[in-house]
Amino acid sequence: MTTGGGVPRVKSADRTVELLELLAASPERRTLVELARDLGIPKSSMHGLLRTLVHRGWVETDSAGLRYGLGVQALRTGSAYLHTDRSIRRLTPVVDRLHRELDATVQLGRVTDGQVVCLVSREKTEVLPTVAAGGHAPAHTTALGRAVLARLPVAHPTPTAAWPTVAPLDSRQLDDLARTRTRGYAVDWDPVGTAACCCVAVAAPPKLGPQDAIGVSVAGGRLTEARAREIAEAIGSAITVALTGRTRGVNREASR
Image (cartoon, rainbow, N blue to C red; front, side):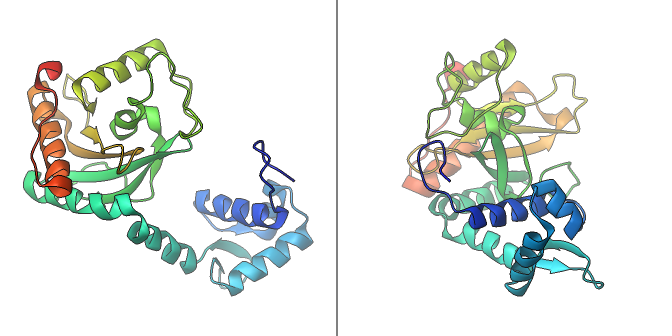
């Protein structure tokens, strides 16, 4: 078995990853029969695969041994990713600094497979509807995702091989990406102030995190265009200070 690029694929490895991904997407534990049915795998093969993963700590069962969910080893491996990724290591202090200085919820997100995944999240003391680390959403629907997608040529929104697949974008969404590229930041906001939470996001330097962005969330009624510019400048300055020791702001003329 090979992929579209001619790279050999191992059937057992494919099945293992598909199973773990299915369990990760399931809000409740699943039975062997359900898992075998959903993945199109014979029950005998599924039973052997589950036994192996339970033994290795990747999968756990309920007290009756009938329902399966992710095990603690999945958490340990996921946590290790946060510590071994160079971009995350260098941008997490930026998230922490902005969280302290702005007293706001700050998140680091990464666009992958058409989704923006929250990698690091620091919550504000007041309750805001934010996404915890590991949460995800279609990239084009969030400021974090659009800050990254704005790097794509506006006339050619389909990514190259180095970029994940993104959903087809309509003219309004393409216009928003063009504005995001010009001013240097993306915004999720409601001019009427009815949104419970709004976000301003700035993409990380391409050499460090070409698919990463940092976003600051504030209460919807508090975000104006002027405040959005201030927040974007604060994000840009924090990134630059952390990486180079020099300050900088976003494009003031373009953001007016």
